[in-house]
Image (cartoon, rainbow, N blue to C red; front, side, top):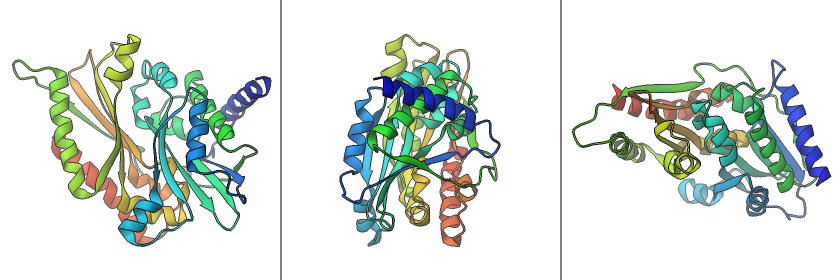
Amino acid sequence: MKKISMIFISAILALGASVCSADAQNIQMFSVDNSKGAINAKSIEKAFNEGGDIVVDVNNDMNSIFSKRYGFVHHKSYNLAIFRSDKSILKLIKKYPSIGLITPLSMSIYSDDAKKTINISTLSLAGMARITKIPATDPDLKEYAASVDAALHRALPNGKYITVNHNTKPSGNLVTEFTMELELEKGTTYADAKDSFEDEFEGELGPVGFLIPKKYDLQEDLLKENSNEDYDFFDTYSIIRFNAIFPVSKNHPDAGAYAPFSLSIYKKKDEDSMHISFPSISNWVTDLDIKEEKTVKAVRETHEKIKKILTGMTE
């Protein structure tokens, strides 16, 4: 227990110090030798869940999907997973509704055949702070990042962080945001209005290639149970588009720290408007230093497709 406690303390101190640097990396990559093949995506999921504060909700074998859809794969193994810490979300959502932008968090789990390693990429503390605009010094955000760090160490014993040198300056807005005033018809509630909006939104996603691995009703399943009555509703989506992540993952497998991406829809009780936002997908191009023309096009198309849907629904 003392060793684990020291890991947590060291992690918090190291993470807090790292974000003071102007070039603090937004993605972190944790790696370990796996030449014996003892570690896989399922064992990593089990280790994440064993800590009690992190829950992996979805852990998809993307190679199975890619091989059927495209006829080939880029890596020996490639999984995309989503996870969350309800404890941290509860603390942060009282102060920062922007925590919905990383609820859930995502990660890629992949093999490097040449180095015989297995690797996990997630957002770093700097990356979490950057997207949400929550101060990196916030103790609850630091605790969330430390929980992720502890989960990584459980999942990959003897693992270590490897050097990442991605661009840290966005090319545009980090977050794409929309606001929509809700006018209730007689006999309806704000929850009814939200459900109607989301039904239409979900119906628009499928035809242009988006899928929803998971949807969260934070108000009903988390906030209400913990006596938080600040919101009329607070939903988040985990969303993915295979035609973007497949080409990106070829040369940038750590893109799983961004994909699936999260989209939040919420309304505070003291406001009349609903807020919708998601991390701008177009920034993958600069964040990951994507050079391939077709891949850049796929990423930008993905951003524009969901932006167009939401623009049309909120105008």
